[in-house]
Amino acid sequence: MSYEGFAHVYDQLMAHAPYDKWISFTESILAESGKTVQKVLDLGCGTGEVALRLAKKGYDVTGVDYSTDMLSIAMAKAMDQSQSVSWINQDITNLTGFTNVDLCISYCDVMNYITSKNEIEQVFRHVYDSLAADGLFLFDVHHVEYAQQKLMGHTFAEVSDELTYIWECESGDEAGEMFHYLTFFQQQANHYLRFDEVHHQLTYDHTVYRAILNDCGFTKIEFYVDFIPEKQNSLNKGERIFILAQK
Image (cartoon, rainbow, N blue to C red; front, side, top):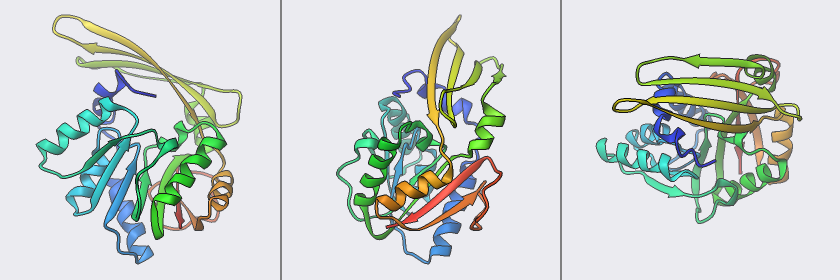
């Protein structure tokens, strides 16, 4: 997914995204772990909102994304905010060139765009190889029931002078699989530009992620729900599951 048109409207669509919750949740987890973290790798960094917030807090951050358009926007923000972040254009299923990373994060359901178990295992193995000894991997995914009940089969829309969109979410053949059909109308000088995108996502039950992480060598796997930094044994409800694994 290159997000060619999507990149240029992404920040408008995500204007109310809880970026500060991702940061506070991350720091709560780090405080609980008792580990000293300096080197952070942000997989699927998009336009850099999380990476830049972490950089402002003094972390040494590298943002990785497949979309050069997303990275161009992130770079411009970093310059405007006088923040030093390394931006790398890579497909995270083929992540390479990183060592001794203290913390690898991947937020805002980036992992749900990895739509096969084999590719998820590829990502996890590359992350494992990139981490320092006892390094941490923290990512989020949609809760399966939330996706099935609140996303699939629903249509969402928003209208404004600058940007209007229609978003239809349909279920796929596999449990937890969904296709997002998006139509945008973006204001130009004297007309509206229309463009369409299809986004394919798949979310698995948390036990699937646990099994793959275990197979890749990760230990101390913990689960959290909806930005609450308390370990969960029962994952019967919630919108977003956070998974923490240690090398």
